[in-house]
Image (cartoon, rainbow, N blue to C red; front, side, top):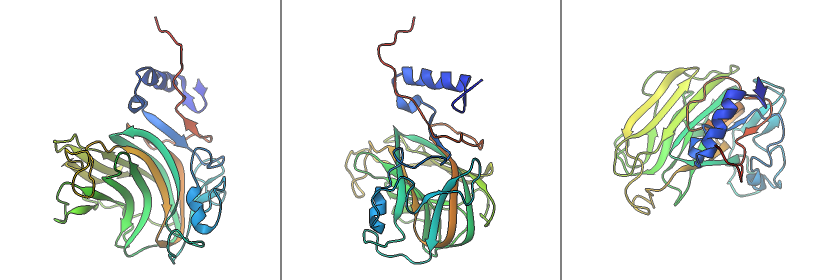
Amino acid sequence: MRIGGRTLLAAAALILGIFSGSETQAGVYFEEGFEGTLTPNWSTDSCSYMGISSPANGCNPSISSDMPHSGSKSLKGNYTGTCAVAGTPGADCGVWAFRSYGPTDDLWLRFWYRTANFTYNFSNTKNVYLNTSSTGVPNGVWEHVYGSREISFTMQNVVETCPSGSTVTCVYLPNVSSVPLSDNQWYCIETHNKMNTPGQANGVIEAFVNGVQTVGYYNRTFRGTSSNGAPSGNSSTAQFNGLKIFVQAGSGYMYYDDFAAGNTRIGCGAATAQDVTAPASPSGLRIQ
């Protein structure tokens, strides 16, 4: 039996997680098939950079019927190859769709991804930026660096020494296997970011493309032991609590579909056509 795209068993597990009193036990925070409007679940306020006031379907990226992975729509980013200054009318980069969740120390994302006639920027082309709570750092972004067709993770204001030997901003390049992302093909991208326990080196960064692991960094130290320390306000209490699907730096078209976030690996099964969000905790309920 299926209820709103979930099996009855999955729905029961979700409810049990809610009864425990912690959102971090909810498993899957949301699934999005982009079949409806972006608002109200996603904020499109950054469209003001393009002189547009919070459109329901977004501005760039926006909901489109051009290239769905499942259903009839997906989220489309139009990269023009130029980049005006973000915050000014007409800016075609630095614009995003934002959604909150969590907060959580342990975040898994799953999304289907496709490009057409795409050239990645020589510096970086952003995909998904991970917001964090508290002072906002450390935070990071899944992106393509140095014009690469492989996905990497860049994390800002970490306390550890970066793999490259630099500090503050670390680039975690593919280090397990190489899976370049070609045009005109859908890929299932799974990412995993886990904050370290303050005072311990147990942070994790992982990525999988069509089930093949490409990125794997373990025993890392992202957060320090101070709630407002170095570098740049690094906080021991920072947790992942939101994400932005960016359009920034590149040329061509980029598509996202069947997007999901949670604190457990979700897998590459397609999301439901309609957006699914964990329901609010019931009140006045007694379990005997």
